[in-house]
Figure 1 (cartoon, rainbow over the protein chains, first blue to last red):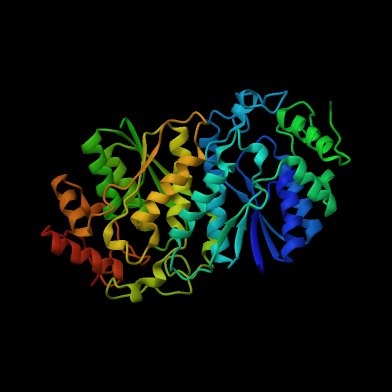
Figure 2 (tube, one colour; figure 1 turned 30 degrees about the horizontal axis):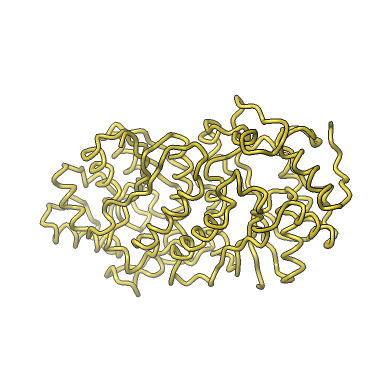
Length: 226
Length: 226
């Protein structure tokens, strides 16, 4: 694959995916990072740093138009009136972190851009550790969306584009293990759901990050507040 | 259905759809109009006028973020270097008017908004007269996208939302006939692909509009330049 467009949040999974795609296909990467009003706005800086290391094209896509709607969503990641949950990364605890339709929104925008820039694939970093909670990371969703997006541009002269999610059956610790082989600078990535400047260490996302480094037997250089 | 979100371009098909939904379900309508850099920016005014007649909620969604990408697409509707085709509404002639992935882009954004505003359905005005040219108006695309979008928000606490396209098997003249029964103010709608202030009467879209009024045996009050 000569050119791959990917969604890069600046988190651990999509950052590792960028390195993995670069290594596996030696492709030109076009990285898209979405500013949708998330509290963890710090991840945008992380995404920028990762693309600088990779010397990859990077666009921060400002979804200002949707922010006023998302502020009203029942989601602690975007609604200022709902607190980000602390503690274990379990379904009950993490339910409020779902941003409705987030991946369909980002992937359909990215698909438009990937059609225009003649990419061979559009990639995103879905993984198995999120399937229990976020439906838009599950294999059946991924397959259905790929089918729909391809039908939507059938025979209109764009390149044969495919949605890919190489880590969809990986656990987070497997991703970390892959990343460590590729020397991914994990310390540049951002996971915390809180709006701080260092990882809080207490929110569900931080707990899951910590745990995955331990399970992957990879040194965790992240600085956590707690 | 208590509340329906719909994509309203300001054209004849989606405007009729708005009236049709209002009449059939007596639903609260939330109309979304997309400013994606189209030359026929006049349609935004038409959409506003239609919502004023219907006394419906209306949002013009400014997709500024995507305009710089779409300007590079091989599409005469958004690329200033490609001329809008004149003459018959045939595949060969109209091919350049395809905006890649347009409906997936708009529908996925609209789906996010429909999830948050607790709509019962998301509607768009696809019809059979466009199937030969625009793949994102075809039944197989519509069905696949509905499946994907539903899977993407499965079990996350949003209402049971459905994508609907009531006119998907109607011809444009059938839509005009339906609209005339509902007293749709067709003269307020906008079809022309050129960037003018009155309908040019010569582009493929205008030719198709003229022809559909004649076929539907409905008086055409549109003022055409030619």
